Length: 133
Picture 1 (tube, rainbow, N blue to C red):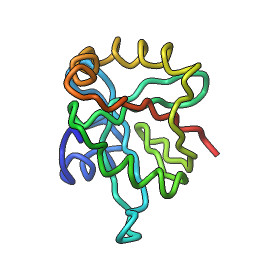
Picture 2: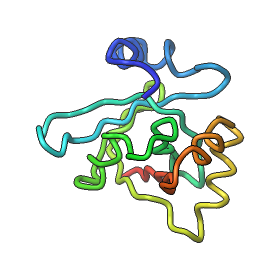
Picture 3: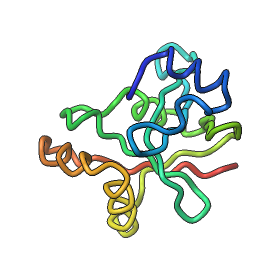
């Protein structure tokens, strides 16, 4: 997660005018359903568009365990996405092995530190595809 709830709130209040652009890249808001609480959980994430879908990376800075939002979407792949003023339902899935290489390159072009994060862990960091429903 890049920022906390304050970033999510400002992004929503301004339809992404504040928060969409961040350190030379772009950010969306992903809302998953908490796997234990059943409550909505919103996370700002770096993204890139790809073939009509949106890509995000479940890096957690290279930690050995995946981020909570990724565990949530494994349990419940129906999510909500906000890109600027566009809010929509989507289905989340991990990129398949045959497509991940191209997607990883696109994401590391947007945020080169993802390669560093992958080197820090034995866990294969997933690229998540968010497909509009």
